[in-house]
Length: 209
Picture 1 (cartoon, rainbow, N blue to C red):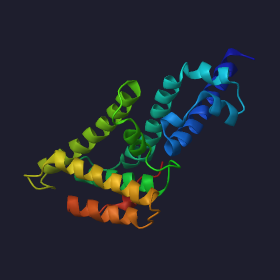
Picture 2 (picture 1 turned 30 degrees about the vertical axis):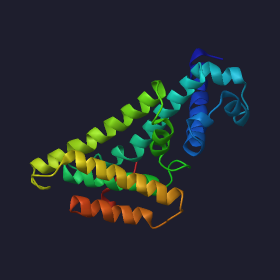
Picture 3 (picture 1 turned 90 degrees about the vertical axis):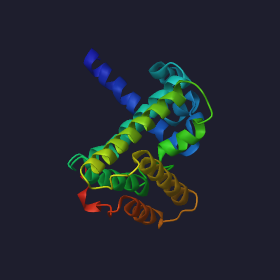
C-alpha cells in the first residue's frame, strides 16, 4: 500500500469514527462515548480507535470539533449571500431553526445538549464547548450592532439582550421539539424571533449547500 493510500484510509477511518461519535453524543452525551463502543459498532479494534485520538478526552474534543464543522456548514455557511446586519441576522436565525427542524443531529441541537452536560464541569471539553458557543454568539451580536448602525433596528436596542433572547428561544425550541415532539415548535420559534427582531424570517433566502 502506498503512503498516499495509507493516509487516505486513515482519514476515512477517522471520519467514520467521528461521524458515529457525533451521532452517539448528540443523543447520549459526550460521556456516552467510549473507545470500546465505537470499536464494536465500527468493527474495529480498540487500539485502532484509540490510535486516532489518544484518549477518551481526545475523542470527545475531536467530536466537538466535528459537530462544530457540521453546524457551520448547516447554519452560517447557508447564509453567506445575505448582507451583513439585519439580512444576515434574519437568515442566521432561519438557518438555526431549520437545523433543529431538519434533525441534522439525531439528538437535536448538539451544542444545547453538550452545554447542559458540561455546564458545571471544568476542563478542556467544557472550554471547547464554551469557546465555540461564544464565537457563535459574537457573530450574532456583531450583526445586531450592524443592524442598529444601519437603522434597521432601533438605536436603543441592547445587542446583548437580543442575543440572550435568541439563545433562549432556540433552547426552548430544542426542548419542545425533542422532549415533547412538538412539530409546531419551529414555526413558533420563527414567530418569536420575527417579533423580537421586528421582521419575519426569510426561509427562501437560505442557500442550500
